[in-house]
Length: 241
Image 1 (cartoon, rainbow, N blue to C red):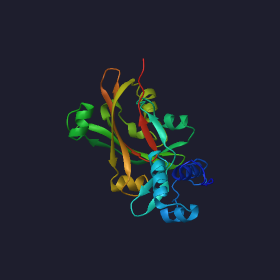
Image 2: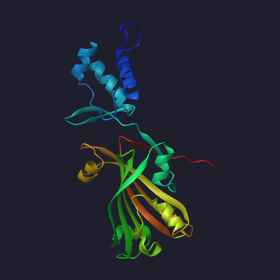
Image 3: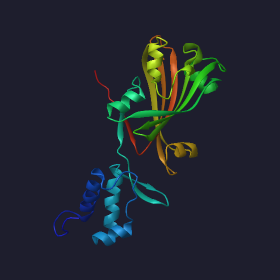
Image 4: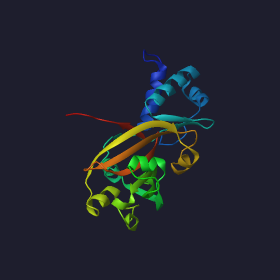
């Protein structure tokens, strides 16, 4: 850390020292940071100074704390612009990463009340249900539960839904025209299954997105419930003329 004998506050110096180590991967993502005591001893500063520096790094999204385990370097956050008709594969590729998916479950089932209401179907109507783990460069970043009206995409399960884009299949194989989508976003704590699959230590923050996609005739084609790692994603929207 730079010389302490100047006008720059010590907590700011420590923050910038750790910040540069994080941004240059000297402190890689998910690595545990030294304890408060270790930082105090190493830099010969007070615990109050360390806490102020750590608070600043936390507010910038560069670190996160796991109760009872310590403080860790956060993964670089991906800004996820709300582009509902852009596929996951397209979004991740655009960011220079390699997308992949694991198909955890795929089946035709009878719609419950919520699924039927979202897709404007009678309760008990057949829907295609997909449960996928989404990865970027091999690291899990999202879970997606998707339901589609079976009568609009019959025999959908014959496709390799772990490797192929669902939107591409709907457009190219079923000649469906996706028109618009309604999306709701909320923050929550991941449940035990979500934390396990997303490799999070509970309690862990997640971002939840619920999206209904519509065809050009305003019929719902897809209802998707997504759970994103809170330490990897920032969701934002942009509107303009």
